[in-house]
Length: 433
Image (cartoon, rainbow, N blue to C red; front, top):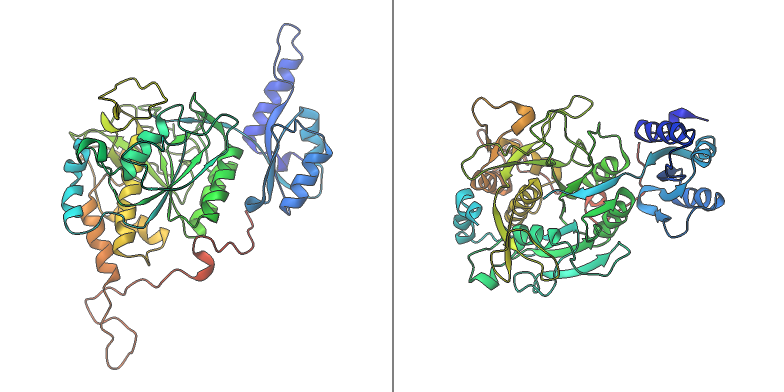
């Protein structure tokens, strides 16, 4: 066994399984779900197929040179000795993290200035979306189902999230519009009717999002355990950011206990969003940092308590407003608020890279007094301030006569466009380190 290739989370699962298998009165699972990364995706797939795993579970993840499988503990040890294997992770389960916010955030004033997220592509990776909903039907550009159940939103979580990010309020005469009501939606279903999925399923959806050249990916779900950001899904999200895609993640609903930031919220390069109330207080349930390796998270706060947004007709919702809307709370509701704001920023300045977007967002926050950074990050986001900074970054500088191309004194140099190999859809050769 080469233990250096086995991620600590998988190592703990292995130890538990082997120990439990030795107890006569227990019946632990004889197989564990894993993700294997090799030198190439072809190698990963070949290695997985060689051990004859359950074919209904296996999935190839070419974008990440990886494959998933359901295997026994002994097969995991065999794989760790393979020279072509780079790393093996536990394919951990992920779970969903469950009107006045628009006015309180000043979004309606931003719409009046002409910024509605028009033509910006937001990918909602979630439980699917009710494509018949009046608020969403005209905005959905493409859908993909990565689960084993029927398409459509049988849980309700994804429809609500999509409505917050980009609902147009058609069923409420504009009352319950989302943050970016003219954004284009791309829907990837990875969570089943119970709100559960796996990291490998999410990774497949991320590959699809790259193929569709989306601008923003919203992930309103996560694992139950604290993470140090080295799990497979966190690394996959970092890779998307490197490629030029903004990834927004819900912090989690395991507060107020410290160190409750799971995956992929623990990914270093994503924008991790905690929840606050309309009274600008921290939501008690919002997960707190630090990450398990000591980094500060979340990054910022957005509304996440008693949010009214689109309701899926095929799902049972707890707090129903009417036939088309429901009220929900959670950092799952906070994340799409941030995704919508990013869409407004990108409409104002399409040259902004994810790193520049994140820098602007953090600089546009107001910290809440007497609240530590691992509870609030940079604080509550002020969307109008973020939009103003995005526009200012887009303004052309006035080069001096003596130094053509340089910004004049007192002016900020506008950021350059993203290199071609960092734009969504331009994959190049991918290596996860």
